[in-house]
Length: 87
Image (cartoon, rainbow, N blue to C red):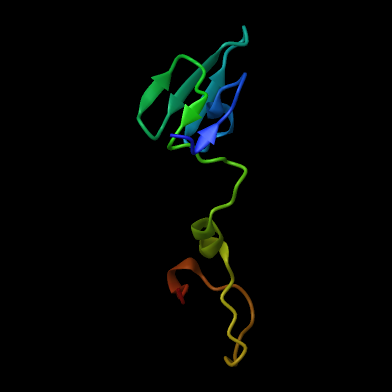
């Protein structure tokens, strides 16, 4: 179980599955969306950890422009409902 590992801090602060709120006194409320539970203690090792700073391939495909140099016609943006997926 070593997909994500850190010392002296909680993995939750950099994980894309966490929801983090801080109150006025500086205490944190952390909820893991992967397991639908509140996290009370710092997590130092998690096999579901996904760094929120790393962009996933599926996310890039969702925002990618589809360019076909053989097609003639209008150039510009296509409405989402007419978007063609080529992968």
